[in-house]
Amino acid sequence: MKQEIAAAGDLDPTLLPYNEELLSLLRAESARGRFLVLATGADRRVASAVADHLRIFDAVLASDGKTNLTGRAKLAAIRSTVKDKPFAYVGNDRKDLAIWREARSGIVVNAAASLQQKVAEITYIETTIAPDRSWPQALLRAIRPYQWSKNLLVFVPVVTARAIDDLAGWGIALLMFIAFSCAASGTYLINDLMDLAADRLHPRKRLRPLATGSLPLHIGLIASPLLLLSALGLGMITGSLLIVVLYVLASVAYSLYLKSRPLIDVFLLAALYTMRLFGGGEATGHPVSLWLLTFSGFLFLSLAIVKRVCELVRLATADGGRAFGRGYQPSDAGILQLMGVAASFVASMVLALYVQSELSPGVGRSPTLSWALVPLILFWQCRIWLATARGNMHDDPIIFAARDWVSWLVAGCSIAALLFGTFVSL
Image (cartoon, rainbow, N blue to C red; front, side, top):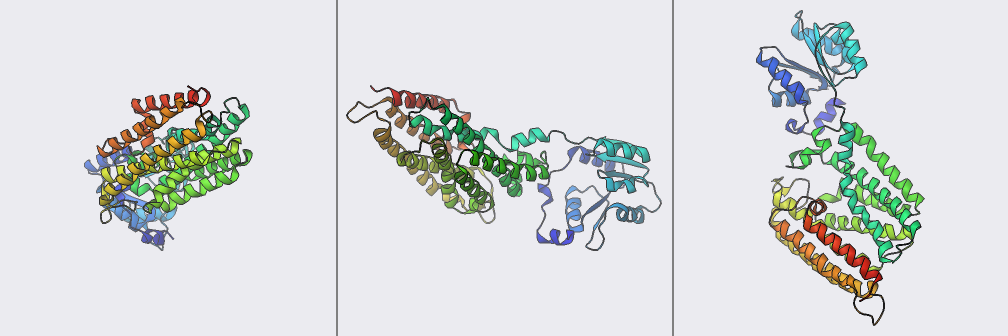
């Protein structure tokens, strides 16, 4: 089975996360003239690729499709290679105890304290490389809590419905906020697991926890379904299970396949934003108007296109000129910019109509402060696109806005205009 899996795809050893502390030790021992053997239960194709990349091993022992080189089988292969000479063994598993019993000394890497104690009882331990205990912090980074700011959209329907005093509505909106946050974090983990190779080639995404190896893959595989199940449970509590299910299905479909389909990817990203708004309205009993949904759709489409244009401008391309893992070519950047800027101006036009029809206090009344939203939002979008054209945009415009004091100022003025304009007429 190992042989068939290894033959199913070509392994790029340069993209693997390595234990740098162990590599430093091995390089030092190699420089001292110590004979190093890579003895592993992995298939020979995988082991040879890693050995060729690291260039520190004098021999390679690995599974070959007939012999699974673990435990006593590995010990026999080592003895066949080194004969009766003493050897030191580097390991991290209980199956290695059979080898450590025959070794003159041992090096224990990323092992539990109980295993370290057993090794110490049967051989001399040269060095111990402690396991990395920082995976909870790595998991926190991997679920990207800063992205939860997008889920504040669930509170917008309560404000636009002039229901500030609806405490029950705020409470349900908070549950929806948590539901969408769990769903988003679960799909982020799925996306990172699917995009390991692409992320490790990316100048910034290569620092993500799963890409660097600081978050073990099995933790990501466990945390992702738990987060998604939590989202579905909260969706059931709020009576918006169908919306949460659609959001999860669309997010997973995007991560698994649709993100590589040009145009479909950005329209789906815009839809995911709009689902948050729609979900908040349905859960709180304050349905959003068609005007608000239309404005949001164009605004979020523009922001989604910003992400793609930024990738085309800044990412190194591969696979015949295509951005790695995407369906675009570098020459698409110009037309995508036109689409994104056009969507920005359409969004502002729809916002003006929305302010006139929904947020004005009554027919025949004076325009309200809500009208300030129109130039504020248009100014912010123009600033986003100018930064993108100049190459100053972060891969995610939301992160860019979170770090940009002008965006904070625009957000504060917009909230003030919305609140005062909704309740006070001039």
